[in-house]
Image 1 (cartoon, rainbow, N blue to C red):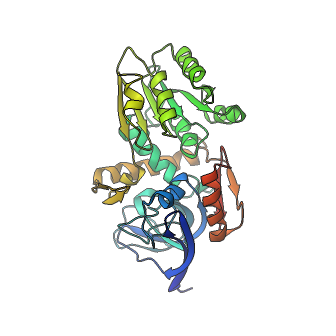
Image 2 (image 1 turned 180 degrees about the vertical axis):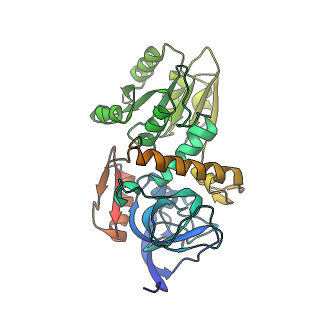
Image 3 (image 1 turned 120 degrees about the vertical axis):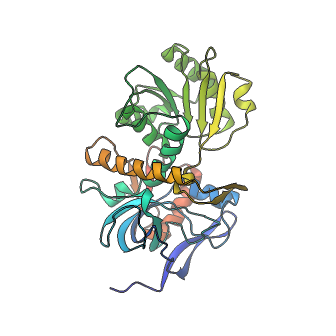
Length: 356
């Protein structure tokens, strides 16, 4: 079957608004795959890019895809071929490469941050992973310097994953546990059992901040040195700062930039950092007014980590997040509804998935 000339895609129209448009088939670049999309998943980043203007009108939205390879680029970093079932992440709402988003009938995605879907994993499961894996790469392994899951620590150590039932937190809990850490996390009581199933050793209710801090400090005996904030608001930063050790140097990393005062006024021992998943692509991009230059070493590390993650999936050591499938409709029409649902926060401890 020949490839189409035009396809349907979800694109930004104006601030806070996306529409389905007919667009040209995206161009295949040397280290990229052209994919016939079978499933897409919604992340909070998708609606935030629309709402806060990270992407321009005409940029294709969405990061998480699963599908079938239709064509391969001329200089692949991994041995994909036509017909492979693949999943990974694309750089949605990308000002530099406007056609790179995943919410389309066909998408282009970089080979290094894709993986062949194992036979024991469905497309709707695999599609929950791509952006989350890249976020874990930058937050836990490049910023907080955790050892790889294949070489876990042997001495006791604890990490706080704030927001254990968020899209990223559900993966963060699992990876940190596989890296040998005792994992403390936060979520609502309704999701305690689920995050414990994912590997959390202790789970605390975040809705009473003072009690949450006290509980974490009691559990860690005031010795917590690592925190990864998967929510990244002034309130969550304050809880993390209060939970971290006040006696020794500690490290806090977040998915979004938070005000330093939210940390340092509570705990002067904390070193702050923010991580951005798209660095893993090894390409220049712009995000909320900041230009990030290409870093090939980040792409190479992420490429290795995606292959490692595929093996963990095959071995049953890594579990995809729970899915809520086709809520509000199927395909791209459903994805538009999913952006609204994600903004409202109506789905918890699961990812919104849409099939095409």
